[in-house]
Length: 343
Image 1 (cartoon, rainbow, N blue to C red):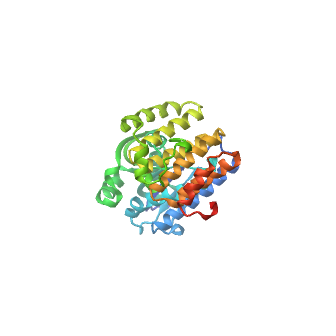
Image 2 (image 1 turned 90 degrees about the horizontal axis):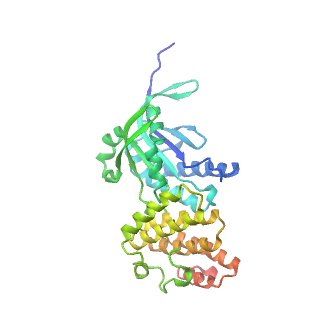
Image 3 (image 1 turned 45 degrees about the horizontal axis):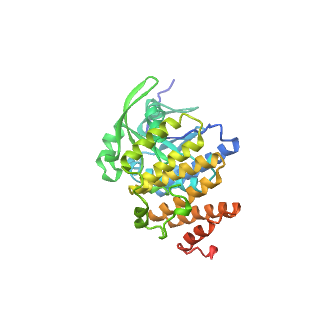
């Protein structure tokens, strides 16, 4: 057997959360896969990484990506997480619940071997153990965002902590125990404000145009907001073990309310989006429309006018279909965005 020489690569492993969920049909899974690759390719391009120069192995519910050594690891921990969040969020905004996605991503670097069947090596095994870590799965499960990132202890020490743009302070060190592997890693949940963004029903909307002042004026009903966030996150953890979609939707709505009232716009947007998905799954059109109206208001506060317009247009479609008189209030909100289609 001739000598095998390894080659150095930055290693990225990405998995789609709950890809095999029974709610997804085969066609849903194909749509998720297409959306996944579109998002990753777009994120690489916007981060200055040439996708065609990377080696890829499809994993069904994700991918293994080997980045050439001439690509700085710095861009993979600075711009890539944020561009990936934005790309996945854009996909989700235009997709039905069964075709939306959230990702777990692991980053590592090391020596990789190649044979006639593909690639192998301890560094690859390490990266796969990171992405499979229960602590990473839990971090994404309890997050309002669309991405949970874990980097190896080596990559954090050599790259992340030396670059302020990588936001090293936003990482937390965790123990990774998977199969025979017991190591440390560093988890970051990229700011949901980079993504898009049932509080009060539409009837109770303030008369303002969705400014930050209007939101503050409608807040305060939850008492201690930090306490409310903690309470509802604990409730959500319990409800995630049940099949009660309606209860999950309402707890997510309360979490969104609490974050909104505290000015955590990105988190509020994420929780409103998850609440909408919960209500879509059980076919509660009225609750979905209420969520969409509130989501649009918070998106506008976050400076996401196009996303707010889309949310309000979707809500209006539901109200018109059901003959709900509140459609006129939504039209008024759309007019504040200069939407001439509702004039």
